[in-house]
Length: 283
Image 1: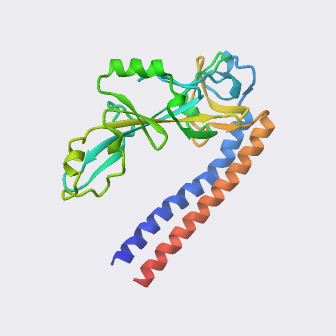
Image 2: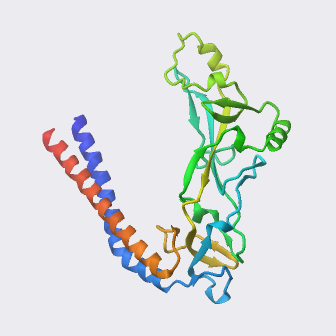
């Protein structure tokens, strides 16, 4: 019975991926045409004639400032900053564990967030959603990556917060680093159970910084709305390409990426469908 149920789930998931891959096959020619028709802008200037149109904006990564966590007033020496927020939670039965707080789960609390440096030398304001998948080399930040004056100002403003180092990573927290150890499956009979339950609700914040030294330019694809570059209404699967210097390079890269993505999607979907059928037959 369980095998049959798993088989049905695999078939449903495989069917979804098959539908998505098939849709991409038919949508790809239209996307290619849209990209070929989109103005390719290299000087960063807003042309009123492109209002409401999809455009391609070429930007040098040298123009990207360092990022700031504006919510906590922290400045960093990286153009992209990933904030990770965790809360110590109790499931009400017998488990205490650290859980990530994502913005799509709770928009009111302090949650995971990505911060980007402003892009200089452009007449455009670029929507950060276009940069969300920007690559580069990422590292967990240590004490040397923080501005001590910013930390002190944060701790003065929010009483109870402090800096704790654990495994060479600096955390901003309202508890002690001795409670940072993974406490999943901790039972009521454990020696430190009471200590941990008293810390339920504690938070810890860490950061990852991303450097883009391996990327010299990015081609941003979006819709021109006034002096803003926003997410396209029609080209929803692409927001930018890295290390692009001309329209011809972009079209070649898009073709290569599309062929790989669609092919991989079809292989995965067929494998899931066949696995599901096999399990149902065997059950």
